[in-house]
Image (cartoon, rainbow, N blue to C red):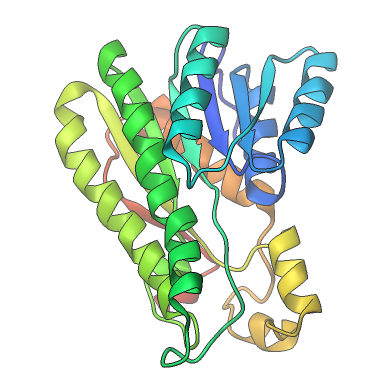
Length: 254
C-alpha cells in the first residue's frame, strides 16, 4: 500500500468501527493523521480509539447515528474542538437490508435505508463542508458502491441511495471546487467485511456466484478500499474531484 504523510491533518470517518471504515481509520492513523472514529457503535469506536492512542496515534471515538443531523453536527464540532480542524473525511456509514420484491417493499424499509445511506451522507457533507469552507481547504470521499453504477434485483432502494450519493458527490464537487475543497466517491465491489459475512450467513449472498461474477475472481480486502480513499484524500489526487472511482475488480467493466 502506498504511504502518505498526513502529519498535522485531521480525518473524520463515519462507520469507522468495522470493515472498510476501520481499515481506513487505521490507514489514516498510520499515515500520521489524527482520526475521529464515528460510529453508531460508540463503545467500539471508543475502544478502537484507545487502542490507537495507546499505540502512539491520535484518535477520538464518537458514538453517532448518521441519520440524526444534530448528532453529526455535534460529532464534527467535537472533532474540530479536539484536533483543531478537519482536513479529510470518509463518509462510509451505510446499511443494506435483505432483498425484497420492489412491489412488496414497505415504506418503513425505504425510509430506513434512505435515512442512513443518503440523508447520512448529506448531513455528513453539510457539516464537513461548513468547516472546510471556513478553512479554505479539504477533501471528502463518499462511499457509494458498485450499486451506484449498476442496478441490482431486489435492492432497488439500496441502489437508488448509492446512485444518489454520486449525484451529491458530483454536485458538491462542482460547487466547492472553486473554494479549494475536493469531493469524490469510491464505489466498492464485494469486499470481505462483516456486512458481507452476515449476508452470506443469512443466505442473501451465494459466495460461489459472487466470485463467479468478479473478473479477478476474489473478494476485495477492506485495506484495498482504504488505499483508494487515502489516495483520493491526499495531495497525490490534487487535480481529481467529482469522480466515482470503482474499486471492484472489474465488476462494473463487464
